[in-house]
Image (cartoon, rainbow, N blue to C red; front, side, top):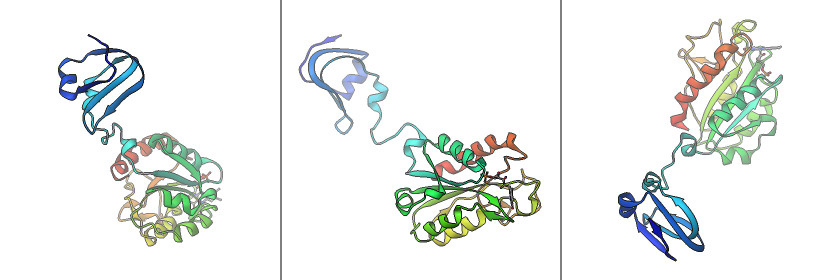
Length: 232
Ligand SMILES: Cc1cc2nc3c(=O)[nH]c(=O)nc-3n(C[C@H](O)[C@H](O)[C@H](O)COP(=O)(O)O)c2cc1C
């Protein structure tokens, strides 16, 4: 059907009944979709195919999970790059940014509803070095209403007694600051002796051993993300 109109308005019902292709030969004004009124106005030089499915969609309803997610950031501490690589993988899968905790600021904390925080474990069950100043920023923030998920990188073979324990201090800090801490993963799939980051049979976040079990890392990340996404 050829349409030549300077200001064409179609109701939604008309589009659903009749429209497959609309060809308009008018100038200047771009196609505008108006979900509130459920009308389509057109006054442009255009060749357009209108897919009724796209018209039926309310503008406030988003297509993908990442569009529905509240502002989210991944913040990591990493000394030799392992936790950084994992943080970047998690951020890419969520479609959000990853930030070295060395660059954390209260503005960044305030701007994000969801904080995905990752640390490797060093010393004897301690947080990665840069987190020591990082947690000071979290302590001084009001995390009420914010959601936190943790991930930790460790070595369950060489440091079996303190596997991924570094997550514990961050967990304590964010809970004290008012955040909701999402549940971590069950310990069943891991082989280690002890960890301060375990409560009631679960880690306080996602535990990863990219040194000895790198083949499990991707699946562990994916399973964990599927579990936490509904809360982000
Ligand atoms: C001196 C040293 C101490 C470590 N202490 C622990 C520990 O207590 N618990 C643990 O799970 N991993 C421990 N690790 C392993 C690191 O957490 C692991 O290598 C991690 O992948 C490092 O991540 P990063 O490069 O992102 O800092 C230690 C490693 C070193 C070299």
